[in-house]
Length: 277
Image (cartoon, rainbow, N blue to C red; front, side, top):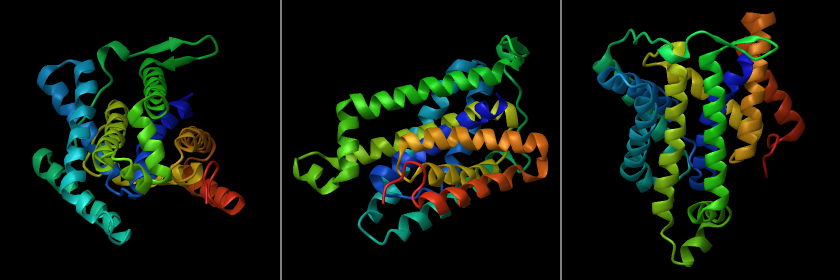
């Protein structure tokens, strides 16, 4: 169950990465930074208004809008250039945003606590499980259902799927694909920010928190298959379980087990569990 709650965080992170890569073909190394910004925006809004639900909803939306602005101003001019350019740009943005947070909030980070309504444990019949972790699982599942409905049941989602397969043909049909790119980038960033906001009460927040998480999120994306939303969900839950079970029996190998999984999957499938050539 602990692995499931951790896996939901990876699912949200990796789904955002997969959506962005699937349509824009941008390997967003700043994704972990937006995860960190989501945690800080949640903390800051909560400290201002003291309302958990408003902070949880508003924080990711604000960071999603920031992500859209970043895409329009910095990444969009690099479309059509060497694919390494957006990668290097987003890597540089990571250090920029981390330093800005250090200036604004300090180097030590901020302590967080479980919201009052989610303290304690709930009896699941077979075990007592922390209420807040159960809440994270439920919210993560609901959000992923909404993302699936958006991708598969809306007109914009249809354009996203078509643009992933053949962006030139979509543009020839008169659709402003760049506007769709910006919206999709914002959604992917908002998912990362939501992951940060949900995880913050469990782990606390600090400026460097996204640097380590994004590496594991990329492992999830690779294991699931680059650009595959289904792969991100399956691999995210799988990685969460492997980390938790390995940590339970041999804590020092928790992080190494994730990379061992990636090696095994790539050697046996080449493109990940749900990846395509």
